[in-house]
Structure formats: C-alpha cells, structure tokens
Image 1 (cartoon, rainbow, N blue to C red):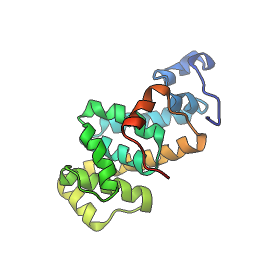
Image 2 (cartoon, rainbow, N blue to C red):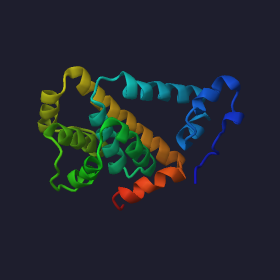
Image 3 (cartoon, helix red, strand yellow):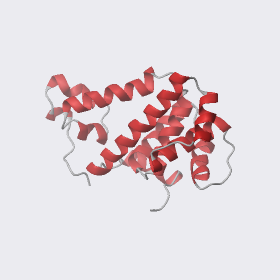
Length: 183
C-alpha cells in the first residue's frame, strides 16, 4: 500500500490537472510535489520523444533496470509500453535469460545494452568491454542518452520503492506472463 494518498484531478488546481492526464499511480503520487512532477515529466518526455536512441534499445534498458531492481511497477508498465516499440515477448524473456547468464537470441548490441543496465544498476559502473561494444554500435549522443535513460530509471525505481507505489490491476497480468526474479 502506498505511503501517501493517491491524488485525483479534483484534488489539484485546474492549472495542474494536466499532470494527471495519464491516471496512473506514479503520477498520482508525484502530484504531491508539483514542481518535481513537472521536472520528472520533462526528462521522461525527452527520453521517450527527444532522444535519438533506438526506442527498442531504450525499452530493453528500462526493462532491465526494472527486472534487476525487482520493481514490479516499472517492469509491468514498460512491458506494456515496450510493445509499441518493437520489443517482442522473446526480447522480454531474453532479459531473464541474459540476467541469469543463459544464452539468448538477442543481437550483440542489445545484449550489451542489457549488460550495461545491469552493471550500472548493481555496481554503478560499466566494464570497458561492454562500453567498447556500445561505443561501436552507438554514436556519442545515443551512448550518452542510453546512460541518461539507465540513470533516470534507476532513480525512478528507488522513488517508487520508497513511496511503495502500487501496481494498477490492469498491469498485474504482465507480471504473471513475465515474472520478476525471487528476492
């Protein structure tokens, strides 16, 4: 159960109701800090709409952060979102395989993206070998955007954990289909 009450549009002044255009629990809690909510939304919009990083690679990185941190909220929401960006069920299953050290059918660049997301999430660093693969497959702007994406979502999953944001019912089926690892 969330540690703060979820806000509804009716709880906000009309000039702030746009913050709840998507009526999801994350935004309903972030609305307790209007300026922070706007700032976080600005970065999220850049990552989704402004970055030139391939959207499939972006979503794989986000899913890996959610999987590694066992963030049911982030993971389930981005399973749904990732389908709009050519992430297949096989790609999502590959996250569990790659995390467990099992082979997958992902291409080398996607594997390196997952490895970078895991390493930054767990160890706060990326190996020289992984960086070299990423640098070979991405230009400097896209490489920077990849690390910005991984860092942003690492912060977001920690915020969601601190506030104990609940996964909405319509997202729970994704967790059944693609379970998170046990603690």
